[in-house]
Amino acid sequence: MNEWLERAQEKDREDKLAKYKKEFYLGEAIHYMDGNSLGLMSRPAERSLLDVMEDWKQHGIDGWTRGNRPWFYMSERLGEMMADLVGADAHEVLATNSTTMNIHQTVRTLYQPTDDRYRILVDDLNFPSDIYAVQSILDDYGHSDGMVKIPSDDGHTLSTEAIIDRMDESVALVLLPSVLYRSGQVLEMKKLTEKAHEKGILIGFDLCHSIGSVPHELKKWGVDFAMWCTYKHLNGGPGSVGGLYVHERHHNLAVSLKGWFGNNKETQFDMAHTFDQARDISQYQVGTPHIFSMAPLLGSLKMFQEAGMMNIRRKSLELTSFMMDMIEAVLEGHEVEIVTPRAHAHRGGHILIGHPKAAGINAALKSKGVIPDFRAPNYVRIAPVALYNSFEDVHHTVMILKEIMDDRLYEQFDNKRGVIA
Ligand SMILES: *Cc1c(COP(=O)(O)O)cnc(C)c1O
Image 1: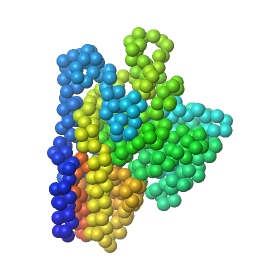
Image 2 (image 1 turned 135 degrees about the horizontal axis):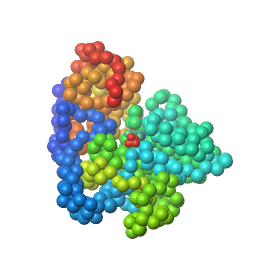
Image 3 (image 1 turned 90 degrees about the vertical axis):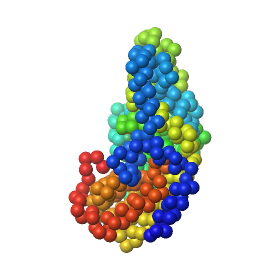
Image 4 (image 1 turned 30 degrees about the horizontal axis):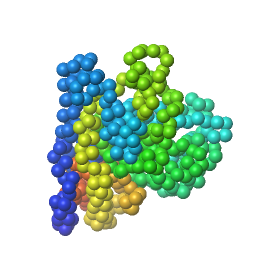
């Protein structure tokens, strides 16, 4: 067993990102493994939030245009800071609204159904909010029966070919996740985009589980639109403002949800009743931005810029590989199933393991200071995060899991989920 610990410690010594761990507050967790649900608070994020509160204290209303972080331009400023994370140009990326709202705004704007081409392609494994949003849009456009859901053969992953097969002349738009929130599978975004465009179909991706964990080349791939939340891998804090990308070729459309922050900034305060739509991604904004829910990102995103997405991805893959290898080696005979695809090209930053007593195992892990999350009916999701988890964290987590399995400690806990799982 010691051999795994030695390996972990050696990897930690070689780890160039190790220095970031001390920038984070671990709270009550000993090994926090839930960064894909809610990222931890960092000192830079705390500082930038306090700075913005100070701006309010000092400048009052003039904080909109004064100081080092004028609020009037903060959504665009954060867009610039996120552009590299998604591989797009700065004028195509914005911090605004929530993921769900950004789905409404982009899909409502880009979806232009005709009698023959009106279907929206989604998948059977996506997060419920995305599905609710798409269904409500279809209902509003009079195409309630227009949703096509790609089924999954194994209940965990999607086949690229199966998705491409469903891209026919009746499909107007495709919305898929980049990384599936349960199994952690990464979809082949480049190929899917190419195939969609060959068929004249618009395509967008929900990057909630890949942003800050997996690099993207949205512009190069030609992706039409994308949205993501910033409170998972980007550590923006609970409910932090979401991110949005729309390819510049769609900046000439009339946005569906109009509001004064989508107006050209030069004329916004003319207060005219004719909407003078902004020329860039700002047009997708609606109302006044939630400044305090963006402020932590100013500090947090700086760390991503400094650490570099390629380095983050490399370490993330090593962490998850190490974890899966170790689980297979030390938990042999325990019926713990690793659901996540093994190939680097096919997985994101978290792993999913299955066991009939998963809820009890999850509760037992939490009682021992390991924070994963449970996904019904039988799965535990674990995300060792490059910026604040070490290989030793991973080692200890697996050893605690082994103890729980060996001693059947999960039997001391109800095998059911809590309100937030
Ligand atoms: C986390 C997540 C959401 C959350 O959307 P909000 O509008 O921020 O609540 C939506 N979709 C996916 C795929 C997610 O992972």
